[in-house]
Amino acid sequence: MKISLDAMGGDNAPHAQVNAAIRAANEYEDLSITLVGDQKKIAEHLTEHKRVSVLHTEEKIDDTDKPTTAVRRKKDASMVLAVREVKEGRADAAISSGNTGALMTAGLLHLGRIPSVDRPALSPMLPTREGSGFLLLDVGANMEARPEHLLQYAVIGNAYMQQVRRVAKPRIGLLNVGTEGGKGTELTKGAFALLEEADVHFIGNVEARDLLDGVCDVAVCDGFSGNLVLKTVEGTAKMMFSMLKEELMSSWSSKLAAATLKPRFKSLQAKLDYSEYGGAGLYGLKAPLIKAHGSSDANAVFHAIRQAKEMVENNVTAVIESNLGKRN
Image 1: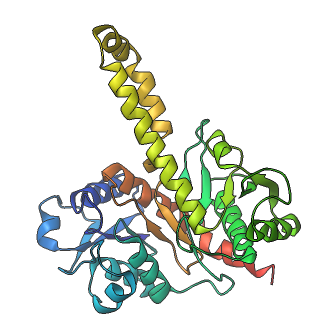
Image 2: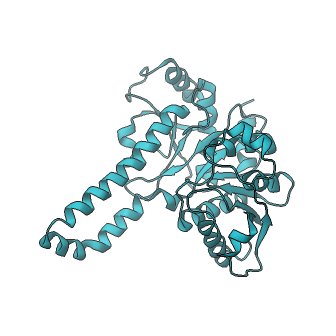
């Protein structure tokens, strides 16, 4: 199996990508990784490894670039070449921590949609209290959606959780302002009716406050709502640990208590660390494409590689296509 990795995208490129690639190649004997980017900059961090290669390009897409324009004009950008490696059969999946809009554009342009998919969804795994996590889709690929799009998200999420996370009967929840049927907007009311008839384990409406308690395995929503949830979860976790650190460092006695409880805090932090779950998959494309967080460190990129590897091994794209095809 081969994965192409955009080595120049993200805040910590290229050293995070290089270190993650070496770690992944060492842990997975059946995996080869192509680092796409500036060979000179990559070489500063890369020790020789027979299953880690470099595809050189000095062009890259910046976060400030307009996605569609950048993908069409910067044809040799590291992100674009990483995606094209998949299109042209030299890689099985691609990963980037770069410009989200540009990656979605490159995926649609070079990989294309599964025929039964109207709109691919950007979908991360987020942490839950008991540690199993839940899949949230969509978080920004489509700011507006129709009820049938949310139904497709449910089918996509169901396939991913069964194939990769090994959840036999994933609980599908519809993000809403209340749990009662008939609540919400015309979008959620329409989606509720479709999901009740769908061949998935639909548990009804779920509220945002219950997501981290593990109320469902898959939460579906439009991209605007999902992005708000995603950013709120990230911000809350960051603020909570910052406040906790301030309190524990505020006095001699609290510092002593902190030293005693340090292993417990590390365990809690690990449970809330989204990077342990991998990146956000662009589900609905003809091949696996993973968007890692822009601030990803080597550990986060490694888990994105692991996630891509699992998607290829479990043939998630084909399963999604098959499941959606059964509805047509």
